[in-house]
Amino acid sequence: MTVPDPISDRLNGSLPITSAAEAAATIADDATVLTSGFGSVGYPKAVPLALAESNRDLALTLVSSGTAGEEIEVDLVEAGALDRRFAFQSSAVAKRASNDRSIAFSDRHVSGIGDEVQFGRLADPDVAVVEAVAVGEDWFVPSTSLGQTPAFVEATPELVIEVNHAQPLELAAIHDVYRPGAPPDRGPIPVESAGDRVGESVVRFDPETLRAVVETDRPDSTYTLREPTAVDQAIAANLRDFLAAEIERSPAFTDALHLQFGVGSVGNALMGAIGDLDVGDRELVYFGEVVQDGLLDLLDAGHLSAASATSLALTEDGQQRLFADIERYAEDIVLRPTDVSNHPGLIDRFGVVGINSAVEVDLFGNVNSTHIESTRVVRGVGGSGDFFRNALVSVCALPSKLSGKNVSRVVPMTFHVDHTEHDVDVFVTEQGVADVRGLAPVERAERIVEQCAHPDYKPELREYLEEVTQQHGHAPLDIERAADWQS
Ligand SMILES: CC(=O)SCCNC(=O)CCNC(=O)[C@H](O)C(C)(C)COP(=O)(O)OP(=O)(O)OC[C@H]1O[C@@H](n2cnc3c(N)ncnc32)[C@H](O)[C@@H]1OP(=O)(O)O
Image 1 (cartoon, rainbow, N blue to C red):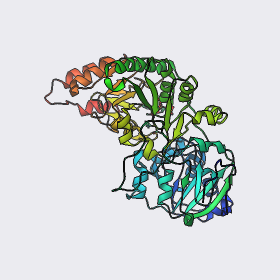
Image 2 (cartoon, helix red, strand yellow; image 1 turned 45 degrees about the vertical axis):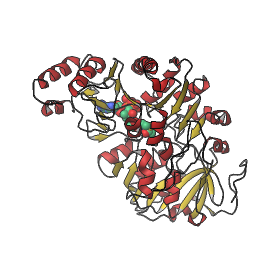
Image 3 (cartoon, rainbow, N blue to C red; image 1 turned 180 degrees about the vertical axis):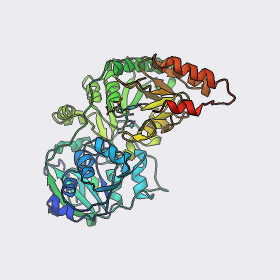
Image 4 (spheres, protein in one colour; image 1 turned 60 degrees about the vertical axis):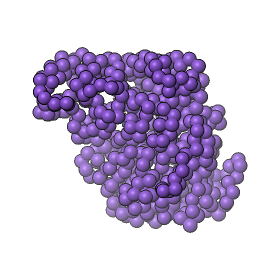
């Protein structure tokens, strides 16, 4: 079916329209359900809520590429409907269920989940439930995120589409759905500059798979972010100083600087603060995964020439701001499927400077992005590994100390490693910048302590380092003493 241009109707052609309860009733109690949704937006709402309210004895496996919102992260979890969950989660109840292991949560790099579902053994899908702003007989326009939706739609035997009247139809202008094809014939992705559009504004599907179309008007349960603190601002100032020197130093940044910022309050504060970076004649480009409010500020101020991402992970205010002027924002923002937005080859092609936060870092430069006290999961690795591993310059930016608590975020050794010492180049806290490129493990440790640790913990970390460096070994450790820092 040809896609109308412009798309003026939400429901196009002959469609199996049903209620959310009817659609939910077709999903087996132990089904594997793939959903759209990333950054708390663009996820299906009515069908998950109908499942949560069904009083059935559900034991679902749920696969979303990023955070889904309340109806999934809270309602389905509280209903005890989920047995297994991939690949990112975020609410307090979802966290609790992962940590008491009542839900088997498996945390995966978000760039690879589409392939893992389509070609790997991550899950054997029964149904995909996705949110759209408009639907035809073999296409739909996604809403506020793309995530791995196109790959999920290709993999699923059955498809349920929620058409959400609360999401503006104009979102069609923002999407660029390019499909990389299946290995071994997967060719190079033809995105030559971060703002290029190389696909369509719609996701195509096999009409044989379409089981139900459900209408809803439930809004996204958007992210809430804390206001930037003085510590966030000091991290941002140190990051700016580092970047200002780096773009003068490296020939890779002569013409353009491509940045990525991770999700969360710190990432959002850093995005917003980059407007004060003087990049001279260079183009400033965002090539990342989430558009947070701080990025809208940069776009509004005319600092960015393009922004490529997979989700409009905005707060409610940010979403209203974008919805009020989508067509203008769509001139600069391109949403891509996550297997394109986070593609290692594209991160490498553009020489991205990746800036992600962490729970804690250790003296040798290993990064724990996901587990408090190395045991309790916070959210998930998300796209941090995609960028830490493949960025030209990988920056880990975090407060040196947990706010209001006696906890150092620079520790002798982290027992949960998401990103190894080989993948991170620079550490930034409100205390300073530790550029550890080219340094041996003990040199890295000295620099991280001196430049990044909080003064409350520096003497103890220095003492620890002095003691372990009496021992033989390339990366000396005192495991028992290091373990004391984990509680
Ligand atoms: C969608 C994407 O994947 S974008 C690409 C990047 N993705 C990622 O980096 C995913 C992994 N990273 C993250 O989830 C975040 O960056 C985090 C959790 C590491 C930091 O989150 P932020 O919101 O920036 O910082 P913040 O300092 O507020 O920490 C978040 C929570 O973790 C807690 N926390 C963080 N570090 C510690 C620590 N060392 N000990 C105890 N608690 C900690 C905070 O207290 C806070 O808890 P709260 O939500 O109950 O207040």
